Length: 283
Image (cartoon, rainbow, N blue to C red; front, top):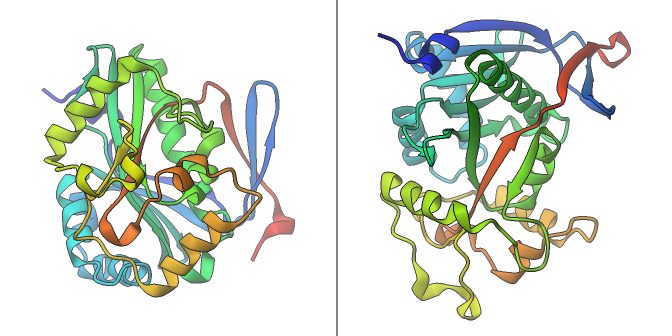
């Protein structure tokens, strides 16, 4: 018998289209305006792998951010159950791989969902594509929660504040906090330990900067993942930008090339996500 999550997240094509997103937050909703140019398509990983041309397109996108994308891609494909794809006509320009059946829960109350790997074609970066994809991902989770009366907790890792700034308005109760100390609820520490065990991470505390330790800081967990120079420069540019509050990223001196990451836990927003077409934004 299929699990509730398997029944709820079948393969589907989401007909909402977009490229550039302008976000307007209302009291009870988040309105996302978009041009009718880009389709969001949701597939199972098995469906993605059927046409070889799909994987070539996805690998080409990934290779433009990672020095050698093969390890990270293979790892993500093995772990993922579904993929959200942004495309213009027959060409994919971005994606997000997700594991809807991670297999852990928070004290048997909140199921964990893991968005594993997302990339955008450099031509379309800084145009809101990842926000657009994540918006559909979060809307699916909201619908699942409503239909199954069960809460969901999303967890993911990142090495740059750009990612958390990109999606933070889609989530609430984000752990750790964005204050100087990275405050967090201690009840989530055992959850982090379970994630570490399931992912077989060996956290490298020996190279923790200045002796700093924090349960959400994961040193050296992705040493086999290397970014290319262009992506490293982009990450550094974001961290150095004074408009971003990057307390944790500065305090713990994360090094992308050494596999350092921050682990985040968050609940999906309870605001309604509304996708509003805007022909003036069309490509």
